[in-house]
Image (cartoon, rainbow, N blue to C red; front, side, top):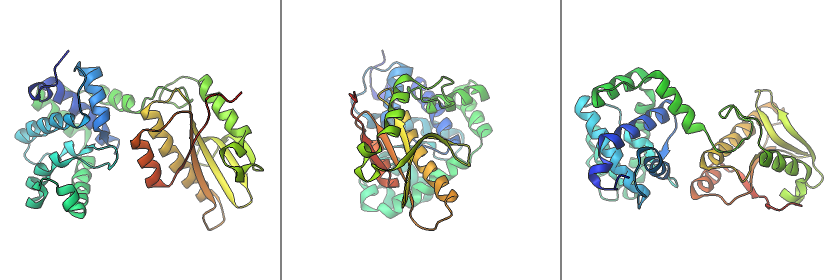
Length: 300
């Protein structure tokens, strides 16, 4: 087991793993939270329990320092490591942003809160540059930094891994069929709209509804003035499954709205789970105006 010393967190073992994860994240136009990075450093690199998720920022900082030595203009890959509640990097990224964009205010100890608009604007610019970089560029940089190749297959596997949850929900990421708990929750939600909200008690319901986009929705409720897309995540779901559930709700809502000939707010979406939600998922739901319902485990 590796101790969580600054030296170990800045070691090649840690930073090259962080680079692989962040490259996969960048190519998917997404982000990695400190909590996810902490779990992966413990699980995949062999660290003992890391006391605070924010400590993983030390690894990201050491990684980008190494890359800047090779290419001073390297896109700031480290900014994609973010806090779960804000989806922004912590103050540790401020010095890199200040240097890159010649904005000394970003060095302020609490720049993210003192200059929130500047922080957001600069972060968005930096993230955009990261997203625009090619896979070939990152592979070449990895080779220069660590003396070993980052193959296209390794990148592909990292991108698959970051999307792979623990629940069998029939999604293509797992290659498995629908799990027993997911199916049971899906059928219960379809049969009991009034339990989700009394105003849906008389709704017509349907399960596994295929949209014009080809997406398959777990359940759809229809009442006179509203269509509701339901995505379910059972007790088997991990953080990745739950996050994907939020994004599925956003997508289904948008597609159903586009399919509906009416103009107005007639379409909504609900995420139904069997477990309590972590802070990151609650924040995502609030940001995107998605309703959550926690179904009882015992529905007999």
